[in-house]
Length: 82
Image (cartoon, rainbow, N blue to C red; front, side, top):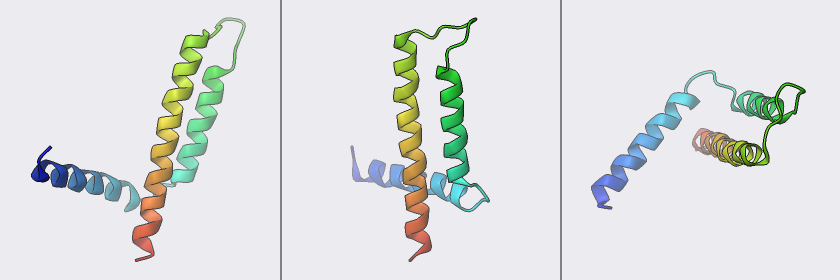
């Protein structure tokens, strides 16, 4: 990957993050809502018995999203403290 591509990706990532951080978006609330949706998705019901394969897929996906939310929050804290 060329230097220009890396800088372009970095710039795009910073722009994306700034869009979230410059608005009144509560990342902690989004993470809580995401966790509640995940629990609801994985909670078995009589009508719907989630297979182990899809339960693991949901958990893996949620881990990525949770990590992303945490890193966005950490990034926001770091630029506010500068």
